[in-house]
Length: 440
Image (tube, rainbow, N blue to C red; front, side):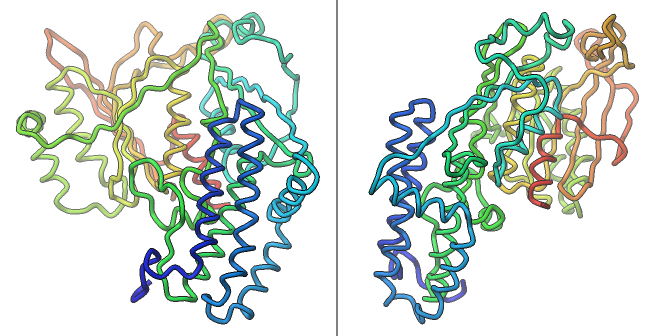
């Protein structure tokens, strides 16, 4: 806000601000103790009381908010029409005056054999999170992942995963996961205090963490109902992923690829022709797909120099790259896990475009004796390609690839091809689920 005062100097709601910050802190206590029922209950009780106290103390500070009497009733009516806000009020009264909430704990088990399956889990884990009806054959609760292979074709079992998702639900709010309900209430109360600050001409700062070490746009927080980035989705903290083939837990490995500033790095970047990439990007492209050409040529230079190219993901807002990271693709189970992690970062950072760079295998469609598609990497006459693929939330898509082979420790490039719009990159299905939730 132009000309507004800083919140630390002239906060019109200092006590309410602190109570909301306490609610955020206790919310993280719930996250950290999700698998420890007594500790989860203790943190939940504290979180409910802190959130409920925000409006109590705000009314004590009414003299600091201009025309409070005319402004506040509208917010009261808004909260009265909100099931989750009414739940906070009733729950706080219950734990203070009569006893704990009646909590229900459940574990949902999902079979994951495609990126579309991962996309459905991502969609369920985004705001507003509801508890969907589980259709089809139920899975015995004591069944171990290692016992699944004999139920399904061998090749599917080899590449598939099991997601086990833990959920806490209050009997008084049976259709919503508790952390998501609390995060919604935090967002509503944050919007209330933000409005109070605007009336007082004070710049509002949402209390709590801002997430991830990467920039988070104001629009991102507003888009998610004033939730902080850490509160947008908790699916990753509540879910364990296992390989069907051996029951082992899937651990992701991905890291930032931001380059440190040093002479050694500068020499290495000259070796890769980074100056050429910079020259190619002198004119800012009009859309994300305009970055594909320069990045594709750079990827070929790196491949020619190193004889391999790591898998890189670029997170973008418009044509600005705000984060870059690399993932180690050990097997298909990890690819599923990484596609879910990318979708989570897209939601948290407010990213509207993603570019992936790396090596891929290509082959004609081949089915095994069970009629299951054989992955290209396992087909005898497969071919290898370097590929750059870009997609944004507005439907713009472009993939550029070039086949190559290794001969006498040299990279020999062969035919290139380009696909725009007609085909979808399955790996991006979870990200599309995030973008779809924004549009809805």
